[in-house]
Image (cartoon, rainbow, N blue to C red; front, side, top):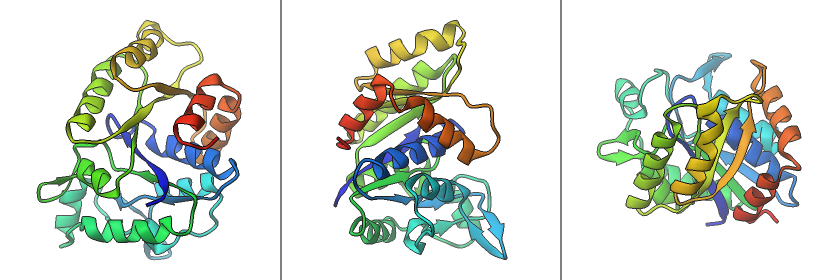
Length: 240
């Protein structure tokens, strides 16, 4: 399989999609091509009678992909629930081998792949299979996306520990939505995470005051382009 990265989070709603889209933009503008994949989406939106993944479309926007192939979103589930529960409600079984096959189709067409998970590593997909099992099946390293603020150190360290216990490689951590004027808890979290989680801190992606995800992606890219941590991020992902 080609080069790529799997984006997971310490929880749902931590900003994974924005981080994944920003990384896709960095990869796509670094001299190669970047493909994207959102294997499982719960709570899909509907357009013209068909389901689609807003997260996957944001990733495609970041990578500059005009039209997503079907392989980029193999499971589009209606209910905003854990994937295994949402799939069961529809009589669907999420198949890791199908996802791996779709990933291979995409990976043959691009120099780099960005795959976004659902929630965190312990989110159930089917039976005893978790998101972590999918990551291991795809043989991808992990970037952990964390939120700023109180509690994030514990959540981030637990996620990194669990990843290693399951045999996954953690490339690093990105804190998403970091405020321009951080409070005490927010200000101390990056140092503690970088010192204790056993993986480098690869970014403090700023909090952007916009409800439009594409505007947020553009603004974050503009803010971090010349940051030293972005140079480290590129290096760790093999984009330089």
